[in-house]
Image (cartoon, rainbow, N blue to C red; front, side, top):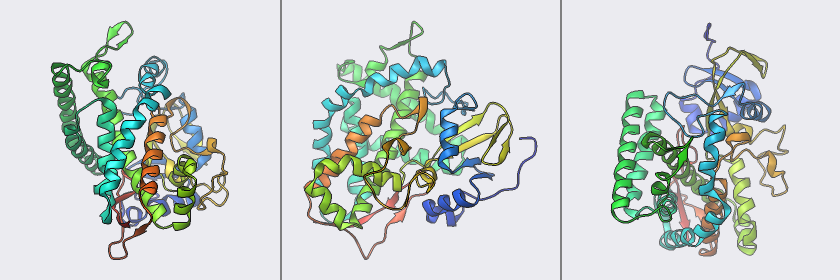
Length: 382
């Protein structure tokens, strides 16, 4: 930017972090294209967010100095990489994984009774165990992956670039050691996704270690962080709506659509980044070429211009308007897997319990950006 605008808001302020949804809703209505020293430009309205994510020629995804496959790429690079990633998330693969996923959910739900801190008892363990099982990795890697995601979130919030670089290096070492150990243990491309990636090719050559690490880092951060947040959000919403609990127990076929609608109301993923390739006018503001932009999914999915009575839970909304899994060429390739996992954990949680209620003695603690949902969630489950 040639002239730095005056800050419109502070995304890291206590007021924002204490209630992210309310803060983002307020920005959408009062300053829909806002500048901050932390995020630079932020887009809050559904129309502006949709415009940015669909117009990849103007709003580029190449925002990082670090290799990010494929979500940090634009066409034609993205076009070449996307099929490699997508073949690991076909409906056949998702369907084949569902029984194992359900077993993980059932084990964790069975143990989560009485007075429960749900993020530690169910949300995080489910996310990391499901991720390891899907990749074909041993459960012993669950805790190292969980710790890595937590440290990565902390460094991102602090904008501690030295820590972010160090943590990225730790993940690369973890992947390198894991792949070597899995191959030594007899893992094959049919049983281990990371091993399978070592057999992939791009432009007639094998994938490099950096490229494999980037793909797995993207899956790990996206899967573990957002799935854990989503489980907490779903459980908290149901705990405060006994009538909806009863409705979903009576008709389990509604679990999937209900999960999408609850997560529209309280999004598990807050933002993604873009960078402008040319000067652009959006939302009444003029952005220079090279402007850093964040699209705010939470605010966009609660925009009353698109969602009538946006705070109401409704299953009759047009699912095409819901930006839960993004839009355009960068729509989440793992959406089918995530939807299955959340449907399964919701079915098991409701099917194996009779009541889920907030713990009146221990209120929920909200998560801080870049996370959403809850840091802690105390419930009474029976």
